[in-house]
Structure formats: structure tokens, C-alpha cells
Length: 480
Image 1 (tube, rainbow, N blue to C red):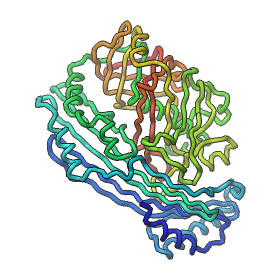
Image 2 (cartoon, helix red, strand yellow):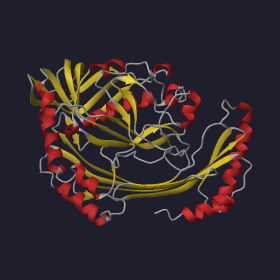
Image 3 (cartoon, rainbow, N blue to C red):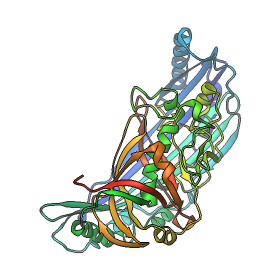
């Protein structure tokens, strides 16, 4: 790890600039994606990317330039280009950043079990082949796939204030999906869709349930094919963690990103129903709602010691007892708004500038077991695993669909129903939170493909949540 450190230190020290401050952020990423579809191994996908971004602060104006040329001359050219841009925009800048603090720390961060050997390509394909071949023969099973994604990222941040921050991370994405078709209807079931990703090694595969998933997921796809459609009406809604993460992501995460609140994302991905004046005053949900930015769960996708601007990361409550208290705003957004935020200035790679992004955004566990929550529901439905989502530009009115539903009647879990959907308004939906599962229902999940920004940045986001109950929610089936 960190083989480039000595060379980058040397070249960074040799850079010449008239700026009062500058930094270098080096990123190296490699990825592989493996899959076995219907017992046939598909060709592996490999990629590798490496480069650096130079950021300068010149007379209070900040600008940046990126390069894949890591030679001394290549880094110097990028630095000079950033200086030239800073000088050009000086007459049009809206902010004087001379008083904005900069990072000074030195720290290393590594994913859990990063030193442990990861299975070879052949071993990974053997694992996927075993799961694929475990799918029973049934003419209605028309497609199935076992997959395993692996990504490693090494990052080194240096600046003229003496900071040296190094991070080495490994991300693992196991998956399994099956589709059943009877000539009239098709139903798909997955192992958490694309939402099981964690930092670590072989331990991630052991935790995720990939081993043994083939037969189980295929059976559930067939059950859905035979199941009745979800009835329409108002019911209590029990959302399992792999659907809760979508609910958190869309109706808490994006609305609380401070650059959205300030209007920066209006042109591309919308705004937010949240206003800057709402922090400290808006009752975002019921008193059972406690939401944290938490980089301390080692296996979660967006755990890190410092963000990409060099700000130290620590657990912070964004919503406490239902009250909105803090935005998802990094150092620049905090400087602009005057509000305390979190260390979430993040970039998807070396050629993108850090912007406000969700990181690990979690709901804190409550005090009820799954059995207790089901027992307290007279007329409801359990839903798991997101299938579709739609939400307005202000991240307020939404309609979400799931893969799997089960009716709950008089405190008992009943039969499976297909095409379960629900709709609501963020500002009201979280107010209907009536029960929060305990630690036994809590799951650490996440997604590798949250998109935002111009130019677009696709980034890893971690979400962890217990199961949760929402009272009197409008649910409907696929024909509503």
C-alpha cells in the first residue's frame, strides 16, 4: 500500500506556485466484475484508473485542475492551470476563502481486513458457479445470475499546510438475481438488488448471504409469480432494512445535502424542500426518528477518517428525536451557510472536485424486535427490496415499489403478495414513523451508484437501518 507516497512527497515539495495555499489529491482505483449467468461464466470486466487533482487558493479564490500525468512536469502544468483559472475567475468570484481553515493532520486509514488475502479469480468463479448451479430446474425460471464486484481505492492527500492523509479501501459487492415468467407475468427477486456492498474482504461474502442464495432467491421468484397482487388502501407499513435504505437515501439524504439547499443542484438533479432556516426548527419526523452521519462503522461503504478536502470525520446527529439539527454540508458549504455540517466533501475520482455527498447515513436502532413490531400491527404489509423509485425535484413527493410483500393481519405475518408499492410525502411520511426496530433488525447496507453533480459523479454511499413501521400509509399493487 501507498507505494506512491515517497515519490509524491518529493514531487509535491518541488512544485512552484505563487498561491497562498495548494493541495494535491492522488487517487488510484481498480475494479473487477465477475458473473455467472445461467451456469455460464461471463467474461470478467477489469479497469484501472490513476491521476491527481491540484487545488490552489490564490487571493482567496479557489480553483483546480486534474491530470493523469504524474511526472514532475505534469503536476506542475496542472498546478499552473489551476492558478490561471483562479486568476481568471477572480473578478467574478462570490466568496473570499482566505479565512477558510485548511487541513493540517497526518493520518492513515484502511478498510477492515485489508491485509487478508482475497480469493483468486478462479475461486470467485467457482463460488458463483456453485450458486448458479443450485437453482432448481423449472421452465418458469428464465434467467438467473450470480455476481461479485470488487473495487480497491488508494488515496493520498498532501497540502502546503503540512497535511498528509492516506486511505486504502477495498469494497465488495456480492449479488444474486432470478427471474420467473409464466407466459403472462414476470417477477424478479434479488439478494438485496444492488444494495449489498461493504468494505472488507472474504468476510463480506460470508455476511451477505451469497452462499445459499441461489435456491432461496429462485424459490422466492416463483412464489411471487403465484402470489396475488398487492391490495390497494391505507395500511401500516413495515419496511425492512433493504428498503429502508432507499427511503433514507431519497427522502432524507438528498434533501439534506447543503449544496442542494443552497440551490447548486437545481440545474441538474433538483432542489430540496428543506430550507437553510429549517435547521434547528423543523420537526422532520416523529420523535422516534434519529438519523446520524456515521463514518465509524468500519465495514460500511462510506467509512473513512477524512473527506476529500481533508476534514476529519466524526459521528454526528442530523436528526435527533425527529428534529432537524444539521445538514450534510462539507467545509465549503459550512463556510457559505454559516451552519455546522459534517465531513462529506467527496469526489468519485481524481478528475472530479469534491462536492456535498451522502456518506454513511444511518437510522439509529430503537427498542422493538421484529416479532414485536409485527404483533402490534392489526392491518398492514411488510415490504422489502426496492424495485422502482420516483421522487419529485424537491425530494418530497415520492412513489416507491418493492420486490417482495407480505400481508400482516391481526399481528400475524400472512401470505406473499406481488407488486407492492407505496406513496407519500417526505415531510409527512417520517412523521408517521411509529416503531423502530432494535439492534437485532439492524443491517449495514449501501449502494455503489449514487449519481450527482455536473459533470456527473457516481459514488459509494452507505446506509444502515433497522426495520421500521409507518402508520396509515397509502399502498397499492401493480394495476393501481
